[in-house]
Image (cartoon, one colour):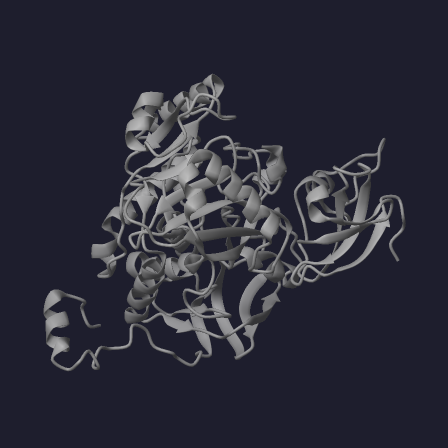
Length: 89
Length: 418
C-alpha cells in the first residue's frame, strides 16, 4: 500500500487516489503552429523513467485536486508531493 | 544435440540420469556477431531460433541481463489465444496458433500445449452484440469462435454465479475453442536448447550498458562483459525497453507498468477452460497441478518493481469471487509480478528503427506470452531481410505518428478508461 501525502489533506492511503501519469509532459502551446512530432511527444511518447519519477495523481476520493508526486518507480518510495501548480525545483 | 525420446529416457535411466547433455552452454561472448539479440526472454529466444532455422543465420548471440526463464516468460499465466477482432492482431495471432500446435514436435520439447478453450463472459445485451461482432470478425480471419448463450455457458462452467440478483449477471460469452495454455518454462527452455544446438550463443548475466552507433548505423553494443561488435541488433526486452531507448536518445510510445498474477492451493479438477470476467479485470484457469491461476489488471502506476501491491490484488480477487464464489474458500499459494511494456494503443511494435541495423520488438502489454512464436518468427524475418513481413506490417513504430493505431480495445496504459 502506498501512502501519499496530499498537500491539501495530509497523509492518505493509495486507495483514495487515481493515477494520472508523467507530470513532466507539457501540452504544446495554444495558438501556435504545432508539429506532428510535438503532438506525438505530448500524446504518446513517454520516458517512463526507472528511479525518480514526477507524476500526477488525483485525490479522487478526497479533495479531488490533482497533485504532483515524486516517487521512485523501483522502490515506490515517495520523496515529495506538490500542488498541481507548484513549481518543482 | 541429444534427442529427447522414450529410448533416451530409458537409456539414461541406467546411469541414474547423470549423463544427460546440458540443455544449453554457457559461452564467453565472441568479439563479433552477425546478429545480437538483447533480451533472453521467450521472444528473444524464439527470434534467435527462427533466425537460425528459417534464415540460416547462426552467428547470433542472445544477451540476457538475468537468467533464461527469469523474466516475463516465467511470470505469465500461460494463456494462448487469437481472439482478436482486428486483422493485424487476428492474422498475426492465428499464425502463432499454428506454430503453437506444432511446437512440441518442432522443438523436441514437451511444451504441454493444451487447447482447452477460452470463454470471455458477457454481462449485458450490448456486450453480447459486441462479442457477436468480434466472433464474426474472427471467423472471417479463419479463427474459430462460438457465441454461447447463458445456458450453454452454464453447462460448461456450472460453478460460476448464475443467480439472478448479482451485480453482473452472465448473459453468455464468446468462446475460442482452440485457445488454451502451455507450460511457459518449457517454451523458454525448448527454444533456448534448440537455438543453442544450432550455434546461437546464449550469454546470461550480461547487462547491456550502451550502443555504438556511427553515422546512423549500428556497430555494436557495450556490455558488462565487454564490447561486442554486431552487424545487426534486435531489442526485445519487454519492461526494460525504455531503459535501453534512453541510451539511444529515443522516446517511445511505451510505459512500463506492473502486472500481478497469483495461484491458489491445488484442488481437484473443477475448471476445464480459461474464463475471463467480462465486466472487470479478472481471468482464471486451472493448472495441471490443480492450482487456480488468476490474474487481473495493472497495479496502475509506472513501476519497475517486479513485485505487486495489495490493493490491486484485493480488487482483482473481489471480482474473481463475484464471478466464481467458490474461489473464496481457497488459500493463496503464491503471488508475483512482472513489468510490462505497455504501448499506447495496446498493440505491439515489431519494426525497424531510424538507426540502420537496429530493430525493435516491444509493446506486448498483457499478451506477450501467447505471441512468443509469432513474435520471434516475424522479428527474425524483419532482422534477416531488413524489411517487415506482412504479418507485422501493422505493428509499425510510426503508426502513432501517422494515426494508424490499432483500436483493438483502445486502452493502452490507461486502464481506468475501461
